[in-house]
Amino acid sequence: MSTRSLLLVAVAIAVCCAAAAAEQAAAITVGSWQPIKDISDPHVQELGRWAVAEANKAAPSNELTFRGVTGGEQQVVAGMNYRLNVAASSRNDMDGMYKAVLYEQDWTNTRKLISFDKIHS
Image (tube, rainbow, N blue to C red; front, side):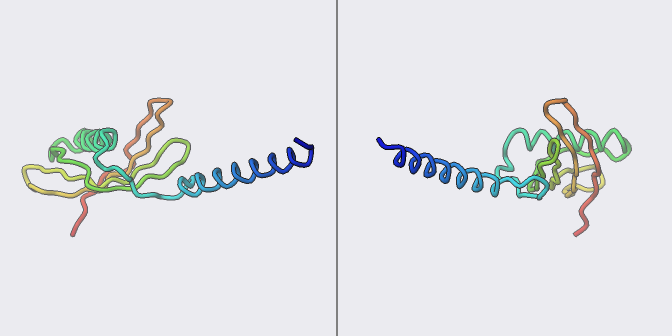
């Protein structure tokens, strides 16, 4: 194979690699909120359960029972931000919906509940 042919093959490979990288970068953009694709993922449900437990620690007089995460978004940062729609019930409100905003950084085992608010319809 001639030098010219090798150069053309190398350029073609580089173009294909650049296109694949650009496509992947478009799929996960750092800093933008993206819908959570699999809301039934056990990790997503665990985050919702954890958020309810943390909210119960902050307001023990109105203890909530976790029912499930029904929707949400995630944002890639130095870790992951989540905005979760959480179904929970209490003695006063049988079927309440809440918005839980939390931060998680897996590699340091860090979780922080930013806010947990009732969604008023």
